[in-house]
Amino acid sequence: MPIDNIYIFYGLWGIAIVLIVVNVWFLLRFSKIKGFEKLSHQVDDVLRDMEDVKWRLESLEGEEQNDFYYSKVVRYDAFQDAKGRQSGSILVLNRKGTGFIITIINSRDRSATFLKEVVEFKPIQALSPEEQVLLNEARKA
Image (cartoon, rainbow, N blue to C red; front, side):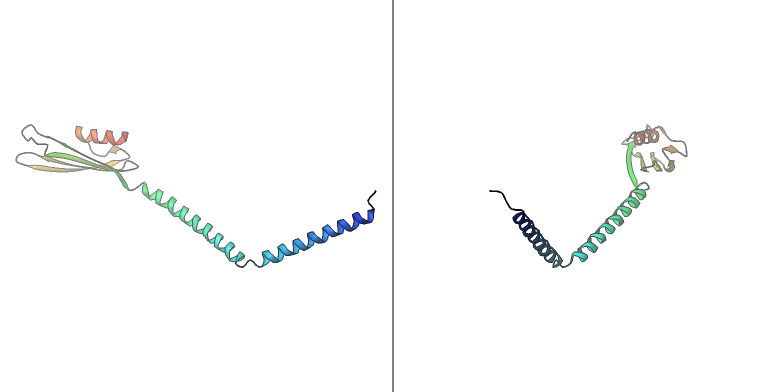
């Protein structure tokens, strides 16, 4: 039994009407969602805040280069008559290798303090052997 073209025509029209009704129902359903624009603005605000945090973090990383991050103390006997490792040096550097060395030399009858500047792991003044060891260790770290 052959299918008449009119039934196919009415069937296609019926399917089209059902699809239109479903489409209108979806449109009405989604149009009732309130706050969609508000949510979109909130997402934009969060993205802006993330960019601000990223910028601040990058600026902090730049400042971090100037913070002191390496320090070491060494104690030693500067003179044969003074025992007990009463003399010592401390090295303090930032990430670029700039900082200072403070050395305190103690003997039985006197004491001396020296402050020496270091720029990019290079001393400005001559270093004692103990101070040089400190600086060499810092270069390796």
